[in-house]
Image (tube, rainbow, N blue to C red):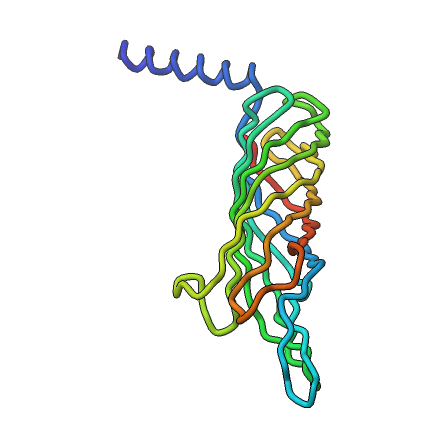
Length: 203
């Protein structure tokens, strides 16, 4: 009985500490648009002196994030996102083949309002990898092309209940173009814009 009381006391102290320092961990899920710019991957000869441009098209994305708000005005975030896009072959008639981009990322967040605020705008920057999986292959078959890049952006978190948040994110990912085609890729990096919204559980 005495041990039970001691454990209850420890739990109460831990609960009090958590309340005093605010909720520091968030688990979020979001979905939205993946907008691709500078998206020409290569050009191929289709005969008769003509070429066809192969491009990636806009699509949708969904993913999850784990955020650790280690400081009053800053935090660290890790996550994964699945992007569905299409490979536009550029021939006549047009051909579009579905493909995926898997992303893993780390970001550092800086907030305008301290931990515990109801509305918290933030800016962020970080690094990521993108695994481009061409049509007819899968991420488990090893047929993709993995590239590492940088990203930045901002967003807004709004607390709607003691343990629930909604969040809005706009980010731009700069990534080298995949090299699963013969010949060099066109100059420049792929620019991917994320526009997403989601919800989070705060602990």
